[in-house]
Image 1 (cartoon, rainbow, N blue to C red):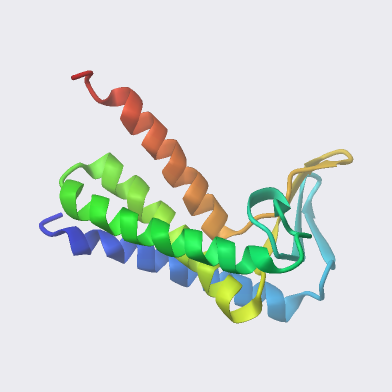
Image 2 (image 1 turned 90 degrees about the horizontal axis):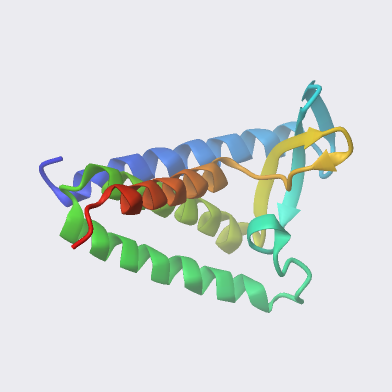
Length: 155
């Protein structure tokens, strides 16, 4: 990339895909409806007022502002890091994936008061917590950050 801001295109793509898929699921399913796609994967419509794995979902409402603030601070820090390190491809890709995912979920949290989750993977009766495209981007970005930290030479 010739400039740091070009990396933001990837974040924008994540946000658009996230919002389109959430809109589609919201229009296609009722809350807690389940469509079995395979013997280990369902589409569901779940509203998550908490963070990852519904952390603090039942905390009484204060968590909405808390998670909004965290997402905004993270976005500022990520943009700052991206501006300084935009020539480091793996690190920058990790940052923009996390940024796109954080902003995708932030949009839900601001507009709806909860995050829409819809991907439900399971083995027999054990279900992984439902998640969405933004969550996949955040997880992928975090994995890339770990990989990047392991690949960098020690100073």
